[in-house]
Each structure stands twice: as structure tokens, then as C-alpha cells.
Image 1: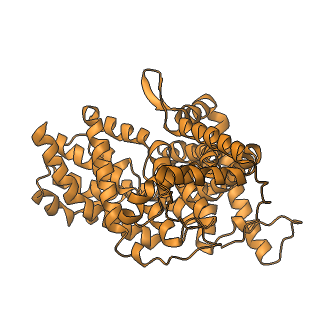
Image 2: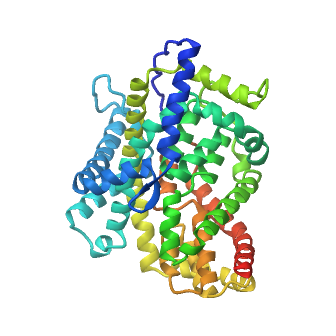
Image 3: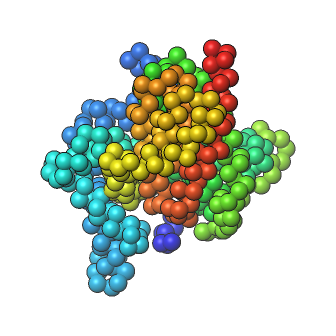
Length: 455
């Protein structure tokens, strides 16, 4: 792992000012990510309003910004490789943060080439088809290019000024015994659910680098709790004409994901990850004097030792931009290839055939379509919904809950995971996807029967 430059120690402020910092920063962060507000006749959150305002208000600028970021990634990756070999000198600039192995170097270069083709509409027709390259670029790459830097700034308000310690202390009695992770991991899950999986993974990666998570804890949180956002729940549910069942879909996905997290945290490959730290560990200590008092004490102490809000925000934005530079070309390259395979080969149909009799035996209608839809989600989370729009309502409900519970997909989350500091391999991601799918299928089938028996 590349070495990171240490930030200068912050000056500790008086306790009263620490309390003001904690309360103010935490409220702003929670309002930004959690407070529902009515906009255009529907409920949303301020985070989504700002991101949508930027992407919808300045589509051309954002599109070219994403293109520049992807090209910059390829250039910086090659420069880092040359600097590592002693063939390039750039003064005191350390480019090791952009370095990677040979495989991901090729992937980033391919991503840059695809970005140029998509933006300037030159290249193979299969890549430029609406549902392939342009879809990945406009719906994933462009969004992540805006979400990660902006989200990083507001996440820093919760992380640097005590919000993490406050929430984590209250969540500890549940998170540690049930999911084998620190209580502060509740923030990672919350950030994904109300904001974006990329924000949740940013939080997890930052906590791992700071020594607040071990490798095992970081991998569990990244692969079990960084799901799609609540906004995307609505997209999938609307596509499958299930909006009257929206609260039931959300509740079902949450139940399934929590059950899967509790199970997967205790079996390979997650149980085999070592409890190693990349720096001096900062494990959670048992609360003293009651949860509420301990939560406030820890939060204020963290806020007292943090840097100024301006410096923390600049540092967080820079880290978010660095993460965007690293992950965007990988997301574009792997996502485009995965969708091409799904649309132009029978691979997922073949892979889904062994599941067909199982799904039929569980009483889910249209098993011949549901089976491949159950596995095609590894390529892109939205594809199962697109395949299932004409199915029986029970089958559509089953596909909606399963696709939203799988979490890991090649068009976004898996490439992002591979580019983070968290020690996880591609084969682990694929194994976890299969385990999530196989364990979830009977659980979701039972939920489906109960829901439509009571409907």
C-alpha cells in the first residue's frame, strides 16, 4: 500500500467549543444526508438535490469533467509507473497514490479510451449503443464523478467532528455481536442507504486507512453494507411497476441484507480475512457511564482535536477527487465489458439454468426468466429489472428484492472496491456475489409468498 502523508496535528480547542463543533457539524451532516425534503412533488434529500442540480443543470460541463478525470487517471497511472521505475521526475510530487498493478493499469487505459469514444461518439456500434457505453458513462461515471468529491466534504463533517463516535457508540451493542464490526460501521451503511454506495465505500476506506477498522472489519463493511441508495430502490421498483409495494420492497431488502451480513461475516471468505491494521489501531472501547454519556464524551473529544472545518473540507474534497480519479476508468471499462457480455452472449442464460428448477420448486412463477435475471445482476444492478418487466407480479417482486440485495456488481461497486485500499480480490467479490444470491433466494421466496398471501 502506498504511504500517505500525515496531516499536521490539529490544535486542541476548549471543551465548550468542541461541543459546538460536534453539534453543528453533525447536524449539518445529518441534514445533508438524512433529512427528507419535498422537491417537485416527491420526497428526497439535500444530497440528491445538490448532485441532481449539478448533473442536470450543467450536463455538458459535468460530462467533460468526467472525461477529463478519466483521462487524467490514465496519464497519472502511467506517470506513477514511470516514477516508480526511476524514469520520471516530477519534483517533490509523489504519484504513488495513483499507481497500481499491470492488470488495473490496462483497465484504466481501456477506460480512458472508452470515455473518448463515448463522449465523441466514435468507435464500435456495440460500445456506442444506448444501453451499453453511454448508459454506463451517463448514469454511473458522471454521477460518481460528482457524488464522491461532494459527498466526501459532508462525510468529513460526520467523521472529523464526532458524529461517527456518537452514532457508533449507540450502534455498538448491535453491530459488534451481530455483524462482527465496530458500532461506527453503522455510518457506512447509513451513508450508502441515503446517499450512494460510493459515499459508503469512501467512509469505509477512510476509516480503514486511519486505523479505525481492521482489514476484516473493512472488508465486511465494504461488501455487506455498501448497497444501492434509497433513490435507486425507487427506480427499480418503478421500472417493475411495483410502486404500491415500495415500502414492502425496502423493508424486505433491509431484512435480507441484514440477515446476509450476519451470515457472511461468519463464513469464508470474510471470516478468513486477518484483523490487521495499516496504522496504529484505534479500536472502540467499551462505553463507561451509560451509552448516552459515553457517546457525547467521545464525540466532543474527537471534535476538540479536529482541524478547522475549512481545512478538513479541503482535505476531504481532495481525497474524494483522488478517489474519483482512481475509480472512474475502472468502472467504465469493467462495466461496459460486463454489459456487452450480458447483451451479446448467452452466458448468463447458461449460468442461470441450474437455478431454474430451484426457483420453480420454491413456487416463483416465470422461473425460466427469473433464473438468468438472478445472476445477470453481477454485470449491472439495473439489468434484472429490465429483463423482468413482463413477468407475473410475484416474479417481479422477487427480482426487485433479489437484485437490490446483491450489492456487488461489475458496472460499479466491484471496480470501486478493487481500487480502494481495502484488501479484497476480484475472486472474493465473485464468490460473495454467488453466496449472497444462493442464500437470499429461499429467504426472498418465503417473503414473496407471505407478502402476496397477505395482499
